[in-house]
Amino acid sequence: QVQLVESGGGLAQPGGSLRLSCAASGRTISTYAVGWFRQAPGKEREFVATINWSGRNTYYSDSVKGRFTISRDNALNTVYLQMNSLKPEDTSVYYCAADRAGGAIDSSALAYAYWGQGTQVTVSS
Image (cartoon, rainbow, N blue to C red):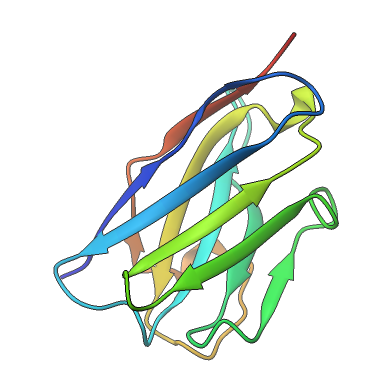
């Protein structure tokens, strides 16, 4: 069983940056693809970014492409989401999720078996 814990959320100003971390425990996620999703109040969960097991392949939603970067450190069993040039519309709860199909690049939440509890990101002046 994989447990995922997100951290690094908080309050940022428009144009600012935050780095989210997704730390895994229970077993290694070095063979899993990992994605980030977000959900704002009253809205459906939305795909943000994903990375395959090796880190060589990544995929982003159009809304964050060029501003967010997903990366991983398999030795630390951790995946990161660097968020730059933040906008108020990035305000959401951010979740990381692990997909046992490690080579997959999948934007559907249905593909991910394990989920963290989420971390709040608020972008406001």
